[in-house]
Amino acid sequence: MQIVLLGSGNVATVLGRLIANSEHSIIQVYGRNKDNARLLAEELGAIAGDPVAFTADAHSLDRSADLYLAAVSDSALMDIRNWLKLDHQLVAHTAGGVPQDVLSTVSANHGIFYPLQSLRKEMSRIPHIPFLVDGNTPENIATLFDLAKDLSPDVSVADDLTRLRLHVGAIIVNNFVNHLFTLAEDYCRQENIPFNTLKPLIREVAERIDHASPGALQTGPAIRNDEVTIRKHREMLREYPALFHLYGEITKSIQQYYQSMQGRA
Ligand SMILES: NC(=O)c1ccc[n+]([C@@H]2O[C@H](COP(=O)([O-])OP(=O)(O)OC[C@H]3O[C@@H](n4cnc5c(N)ncnc54)[C@H](OP(=O)(O)O)[C@@H]3O)[C@@H](O)[C@H]2O)c1
Image (cartoon, rainbow, N blue to C red; front, side):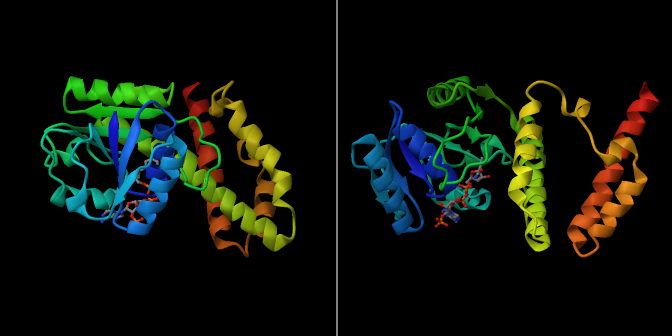
């Protein structure tokens, strides 16, 4: 496929790299910031071995592409729908929590191309990316499915509600857990203890859920109802209001979860 990439941020960059490494081509990068669009076009051109055009001018958009991939912030999709009008070409966006038909005024052929992964342009290695696709016709779903299959072995069709539900799950396992890592690292720094010593534990917790349900793997003072240790830990966290609060709430949540399990057994 010949693809125009709209956006030059994290998702545009990582998807652009994947596409430039595939049999498909990015023919143009559109970005509201011309320098960012140029930098991405240069990088993708170097990967593909063919120059990639770029523009910050909506009037200069290449109209010959098969697919317009809008990898812009959720709110920018609202802007794009005001100025982008295609004849019949397929347009798809990458936002998990935004309805499939948000770009229906842009083209009669529209869809979703959602990479369910945490993507940053600085990443040197592209991780495994499950793609969730959808479209307004079976043909558009098939086109986006086939493209995703060329980029990843892990592709499924997911309607708006399924994507939204998975998006909520993604926020919990990625953004919330990463925030706990952030607070823990700050705590270690301030207490002069090495955060690095906790890294094998972080990896082990993530890796073992390949083999068992996380609910069957819980350990620690909360599930043991070890109130003396819990009180001692919270005392240690008095100077860290966010961690103090979260420690209390998550401890309560773990205890309630396993008490209700026992009630059900
Ligand atoms: N990053 C992820 O892990 C991830 C994963 C899956 C899905 N997504 C979704 O993918 C989309 C892009 O996310 P991202 O992480 O790539 O965001 P990002 O790195 O912040 O990039 C956003 C892009 O949108 C452009 N933009 C912002 N406002 C605009 C406007 N009014 N008109 C035109 N372009 C505008 C920005 O241009 P400037 O460079 O000029 O600011 C930038 O190129 C979002 O819908 C997000 O929900 C993200």
